Length: 171
Image 1: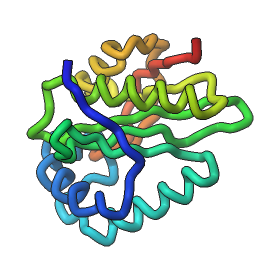
Image 2: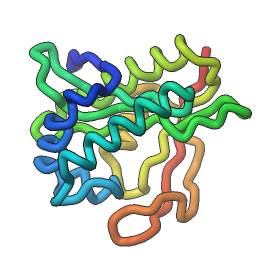
Image 3: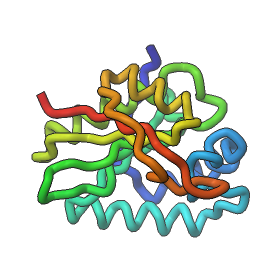
């Protein structure tokens, strides 16, 4: 299993984020609507600022994934927090050059543990496009329960997609 660390995003992460996105557009971009070949430093900085504000409001918790040497590997976070019903989405992505090494499951475990420890959320949902088998494998590796297929749940490159719903619940 891969060792990695997760840390809340800082503005200083913007250049690493851009480089990883541009490296990974072909592999990750088909599943993530915000990935595109012209992803810019301004977009990364704006996104980080917005996530920092959402964290202050308790509405999102986004983390940069880094290896032991500090190399940026991708992102993992909890967003779309529903405070009334105490659930949120858990998502992850890993840059192309770090894929296949167990980074996403390791990061997802760390983030889920941190969020369950630091919030009152009871449920984290992992929603993967039906064609995104890699992401489904990550959900299964972290012990998430497959709950079913949601019709036309996601908008991805090329239109809407059915999605597989997984969940992790607080012990």
